[in-house]
Structure formats: structure tokens, C-alpha cells
Length: 338
Image (cartoon, rainbow, N blue to C red; front, top):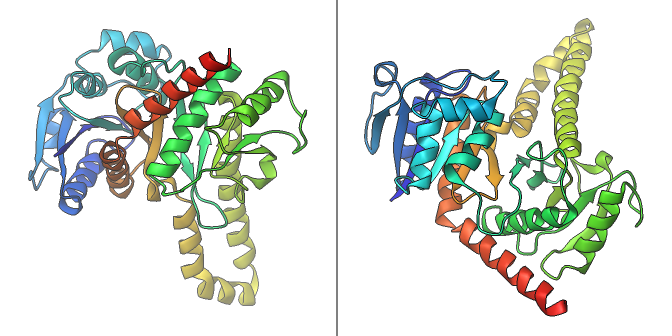
């Protein structure tokens, strides 16, 4: 059985949506068990079916607006998030899903789970929908605002393994976010990363990719530093939301527009579902010793179910071990070349 730790108290709608998502996950996924970390008295009213689900009492939560996440984790080791993270480190569970504060989860994962051997930096990597219907990995969306080029090589390895094992892409293509497609474009960081990716036999590099192609990319993995990729992700979110609102406004104007809106409701709902992060699950934090999935803070039961499903699949496919093997081979090749 795959054991999934759930931070039942983190997020905007805790613990109701987390518990409902967990119950659905157990019902639809045969090889998982779930451990809910949280306030037992708050959890029990929503836990109507405890099949393969148990509760571990915690004490307190990490606030969503916490200004010092490292201190918050260290001072609240009995919080639901900290206890769930610790269970992965101690191997009581195989993965954790949390919709709690992002920076606290990252800090807690570093302190309580730890980085993989030889992995220099972690990265947050959501999976985005595209015009082709195929998902794409975007990283790093906020883990490292500044980063060394060689660390991005490791992140590209992780994303490539994830794309192959979880998304089913035989030969994942990696693109580098840049202001132009030509070689030599961008900052010094971008130029150095371009050369490293080009020379690396374990990275199927397709070159620079302009942000205008993010939703119709020529690649399966799109990578940059945490500052750039985070801006790209938030721009997409804002643009989709704004375009949807403007489209609805235009369709609501006049009699013919309202008739058109009536006939378009089903299509608009499909569009909204297609762009919703909940349909995918969460963003995996790459580079850790265990599987840590960050679900959106506003996740409802469906989104939490998908995040649990995602976590189980990553464990099932043994992604972390396979990434370690690639990084090990890469270091051997570098030493041989030297």
C-alpha cells in the first residue's frame, strides 16, 4: 500500500475539502492508505467513511500569511503541516499533500524531509494545460528567485524524468524561457544555461522559447529561474481569468449576445475546467528525498483528490530514485570529460 500523508488543516477550506478529497481518493484508488494530520474533533464530523483512513492528532496550523516560514516550522513542530512532513522523512508515509502556505511548505520540506543526495536546489513545478491538449511542466515557479546554471541542469533532469514517468512522454523536450529564440539571447544566466543544456546528452533541448508560446509550446518542459517562471505562471492565470470575464461581458450584451451565451454555456464550462489547476492536482516540489505535492490553497475536494492521485502515481513510478540515477550518470560523465 502507498501511504499518503494529508495536511488536513492547511488551506482556505480546511478540513472539509481535504477530507472529502481523501475519501474520494481511497474509494477510487485501490492501493493507497491516507493519514490525516489535524484536529481530530474538527475532522471527525466530515469523515463519514474511514476506510483506509486514519487520523493523527496535531496541534495548530501554519498561517497562510506567515512572514517567517522557517521560524514558523521550527516553532510549530506539532502543527499539521510539520507532522505530515516529518512522517515522510521517518518513512511512516510515502508522500505528503498540502494546500497550506507555499513558502512554509518549501521551508518545512527542506528542514523536515531534506534534499535528495547531490541535488543542489529544489524547484516548484506545476503542470499546465496547453492548446494541443498535452500537459506541460513549468519550473521553477518560485522556489529559487536566483539560481546557478548548473542547478538548472539538475532541475531539467528531474522534470524530464517526471514527464516520462508521470505524463507518459517517451522523449521529453526541454525549452528555456527567453526573450527570443536565437542562440545568444537573454541574460548571462540564460546564455550559460543554453550552452549547458545543448551539451548535455541527457537533456533533449529544443532551444529558447518565447513566453508568447507558453500555452502552445514546442516542448514538454519549460524552464527558467524562479522569478521569471513565477511571473509567467501568474501572467497566464491572470490573462485566462481576464479573458474569460471579457468574453462573458461581450456575450451578455444585447439580445443576440445573450442567446449566444445561452448556447455557449457548455463550451465555456469546458474551457474553465480545462484551464483549472484542480483538474491536474498540484505542483510537485522537485529535489526532495520524499514526494511533496503542493495543492492550491483554494483547492476543493476534487482538486485535493487529484493531488492525492498525483502523489500516489509519483511514488508508484519511483520517480525520485530514477532522477537520482540520472544525476549520478551526469556527474560521472562530467568527471570523465574533465
